[in-house]
Image (cartoon, rainbow, N blue to C red; front, side, top):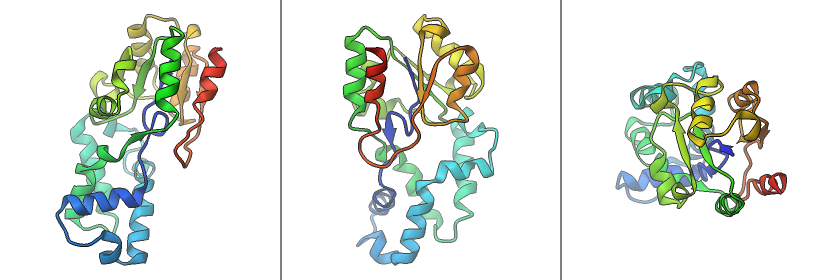
Length: 218
């Protein structure tokens, strides 16, 4: 079983909470909402909620996911386009970004259920940062037999290479695997290798609907 990471196993969290966390990270008094005002704060929270969707505008080839330096450069370019976002707050948002990512409530039970059934589990992630810290902090890393991250293997989804690497690490052929992700653009790349693919679009709320995977496995 191959899983995407962001918006599949973990949610990036409430965007308002992300802005407030960055505000506290800067050591500023009060709250960001009170200081910035309702309109400015709302616009900013709405923008960061879709930040990596905006990234396609400046990085259509997903080069940000091939190196940490490029990831940060794309982020900086994006934030310079947002009038409501001052440089210091932009830096703080990036610095606390991984702290806001939390597993969906059904992530851990589903992974544990799959392991109990003897299913090998792999992560296949387009990420220009090391997400292992999030996996370890949230108790997910010990459940994974393979962690394949784009910036470490030099390949991004939907290209075949990153999926081939994950299948090789798990030691399973494409027809014996299932890819689970949220992106109809990136994650369906596995289907071109003959991997059955399940797309669960991004959801809002603590449950993502991953229990359907357990029903498919039986």
